[in-house]
Image (cartoon, rainbow, N blue to C red):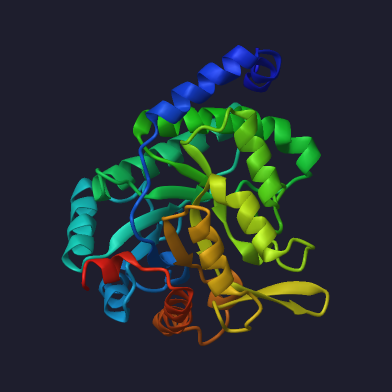
Length: 316
């Protein structure tokens, strides 16, 4: 019997699965929030140079891009390189808050197993970097028509959630404007179909919901109970399309309201500046200038919201 058929047909089974998965995932509550920057936007620079630069700018944490093509690809880092990365983060007091993957719920068994292996590798890296509080692993789920693929997603994500629970990590799925799962409600539906396991959460990014009749605070209230990671960037209309920009660059998203809304709902996790490929692929793009500009906007939003950051709490 397939996982979704079992869950649909057995309320007792669903309750047992939910209890099992919730009991096995790590506690992610923290007293203060963190502000981080994603190395998804620094592909052209060695990460060993980016990390101290981010700490100098003032960030509390970093999201490491561990997908193929980046120098922190979890499949390529040796044990020695993992130790060096862990030590570098500790030396500059920067928290590894998230790991960005790019794996999909594959239709074929081989593609599914490839995704599982990539998630296994990311979890291993996370445990090596921060064993007491491993970073969230976030990924989008790919394209397709929602009604056509959501059943497959439930089946595959069930295996992902089980894997995450067994490895002591959390996977956060990200609704994407161009994906089959494109709204917070879609991610919530998937999570609830699996009994709301704490090892499977959501990555919230309002830039993917803007200009789609989804008011900011409504999405915050809807998503907050399921959110383990927040990504931020600006979105603005350009003709018939929506383009992405650095946080605060276009002034289209009220980050103060976003931060307060999540704080009021109990969120104490990371807020991460993510530079879109639309930005990083432009001629003359400067990754560290983007990090500085993003920090200026987001640090001000934290200050105006009255929400303390973990760095301020420890006096750094």
